[in-house]
Length: 397
Image (cartoon, rainbow, N blue to C red):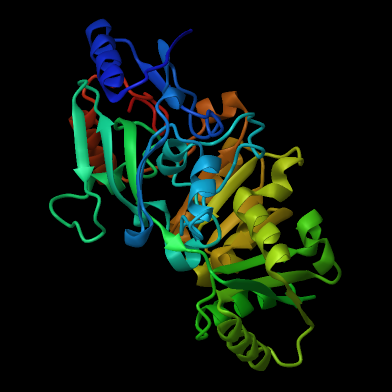
């Protein structure tokens, strides 16, 4: 397959115009680490955006960063760390989970809405994107949003690009809100608690005045290397807190009082960083030969959803709102999970599975007829010839 590697936004526009003239579909990649998420793309050529990289503008005092779409996440995180700042949504690196080599990029992170445990407090990727530039399916360059956080004029197209898996346009530049790094961090771990008790503890912690930035639960069967210190018993509920030294002590005091008499331990900053990085990245699944589904449900329905899913290997994030499940990528499982979301609300996504299964199964939640028509209309407005990542999310779109 032919690979086109543009070096500028003008090159991208020209490549898209040529694709339109030839009616040739393009698969959009940059780092390629998330290429195996979603349905397989049937394309005539690959548009490799890795050559369009680098920081365009960084204003630490304004907490705003503008980068080209192919910029590696590692380069962005290094630049922000020099100013003691970070991306507040805690970018997830799913490359090892999907068996992909190379480095993830900002465009892939935005396109797949790849965020970690901090989502429970800071929101998803779309809550941190304030502007972007992209080329649509007609080869037109579009600027959406701005470079100031208070920009609220017009329809927020920049947020629409988040989680669209590159089906609406080819991102060339992205502007994000950044945030200061917390001075200190710790994990308050409740040990030897089963799923019912652990998930209830996380929901309780979410209501305490501690501003928890991570609320996860691991059953004993799913402990990995990073959780080895917590092994034993039926499972562990993990509560991440952050702040200055004094603030951290106050939050720990609140937690000790709220969970007095429970078996607990405290993990330091370094252990906390390793632990929650692995949670966001799905690290315990990386070396496990199983297909993976992610089930997003109301936190109060997490236990009901888990029971109905029949998953034996799993863990919960976002106080049970995000469930990682080791289940087969087959029709029976898809039907069962979609029955759960129909009952309790939410959606199920096939996170990892064979190419054949991803081509045959509804990888993303099946849309209602009304929403499906809206999706088709949006696709037609941005990419009328269906040239950009066709079929990546839904067949024939």
